[in-house]
Amino acid sequence: MNFDNQEETMSGSEEVHEAVGVAGETLEQKRDRLREFVGTTDRKVKRQAAYELMGVEAEIAAKAQADLKAEAEQRLLGIRRALGSMVDQLEQDERRLAEAARQYVDTAAALNARFDKAALLKHEATALVEVFSLKAPDLPTLTPPAQRPEVLKADSAAQNVIARQHGRIEPAMVWKMTDGGLMPDVRSFDELEGTPSRDLIRRKLGK
Image: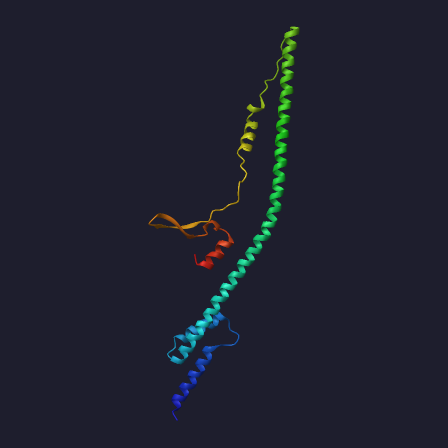
């Protein structure tokens, strides 16, 4: 009996068994261990390890995709909750804006009415001086509301407020040169830059 061959066979069997699996290890640990066995000189061990490694790497890839999808689902749930809260806040903002507009209109009306009363008082004084030959009193100069600096600032600020007309966001594209000129090719999703979803999409598509 060739004990050397027997020992080599037993050793090879042990290596094959070890390459197949170790209880309690993670997929990543198993992948790393199998990669070591792939570099062994024993063909049987190498073949078995390579076969196992393909399966493990496929499992790891599948798990990574499943985990990524679960993250996307969680983000989608978060977006739904955030939007629900934002819709309520938008309605509150709308009411506050309407109230501020009413206050602006009311304040402007009060300003005009007060100016009109002041102008009438001054006109009344002028009439008395004319009719009764009185000495004209030293009356203050009246500045019309439309010429007052703060009124002009307020009016300009109100005029410059532009309400959003739509919520459309144009998809960012990757452009390429074709026979017909520069044309959009595929989406780059760069319009989402700075959002969690951009990172998820980048990890999914690799770009």
